[in-house]
Image 1 (cartoon, rainbow, N blue to C red):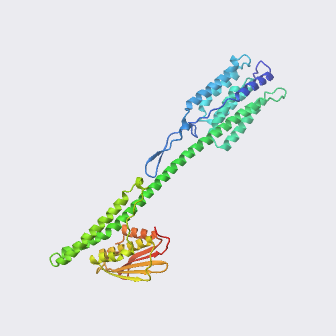
Image 2: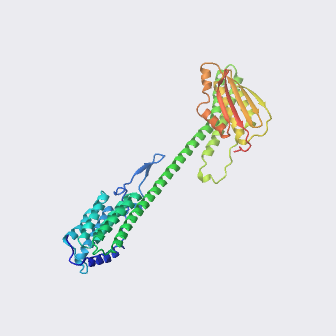
Image 3: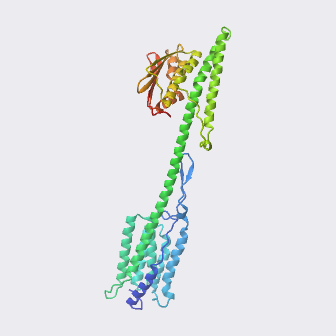
Length: 447
């Protein structure tokens, strides 16, 4: 084995002196690398609304280019390996020691692709340089940089195991150079440098994962917010469709039927024609007024939200007589029967009860036979029952009646009844079509 010309104890003293100085050097993390050691690429995610959301990591993770770190690492190794040649007080290395001190400079740029093999090769270079009697400062730095790279890309348990094995191997190789069994204190700065490198790499990995996790959490929060906004938009559209149906469907049915009556009785019964036209005119005014109120509400934007807006009056069972009169004028014979005490109802329940009667009678007017309908309103202490029946024949009439409350009619009716925690049943039964709604009289429901 080749040995330096100076005594081994002097080598150990000099190595100790320079390693103490070297332990203060900070190994800077590579912020632009991902777990595989490559610069992290910008990705993209698709939000709930179909819009592409950039999933690039935060800017602080990609400030330093990979080649800049390679240049710094190679420069550090070359300078520390060549220092004994140009500094007279340091022991000049042998040729083999110099070669193995410079060899890690060629290995370190490969540490991202092969982190563990590069670390093992640096330990071998350290061992050869140490056993050659030279100052192994450069291989120590190279091993520390390689260990940092492993810790920066590995789970913590693997980092601890790798660091322990690396420190044990390098401390053991250093102790082999001890003369006459004298303990060499230079192993302490070697162990401290390697432990610092492993801890720094693990801390850098943890910080990078934390920042990326926070960034991804922000993206998920944005997607959740956008999905909630889309859900609210959908619900608002359904509400508008329901309100528009309530405002238009009944009046359009009245207009259509009275237009038919006016056409058929134009010559034979002018008085009947005049009544039908008057009903059409009144229904047209009503539907225009209701549509105007609906449009006025839709024009209220967020800038006007702070200004109180008077809500349009909503019909209730107090206007039931006017509603029945409209249907009777349209040719529907309606029989009303009220059971129980008629005390004041919660505002929401009162509106829903009116809409149930209106929707059921509209269905009877459009699809029922004999243009007859029966309305039963039964007041109980805890609930209000509304039962509307109308006769239907077989074939087309029954099928039409069975589907008369489909679409926005049935959906809107169930939504309105459900808004006050009630229930509704619809369908053909015993030769007639029935709408049976039960509304709980919860006095707290007033909105």
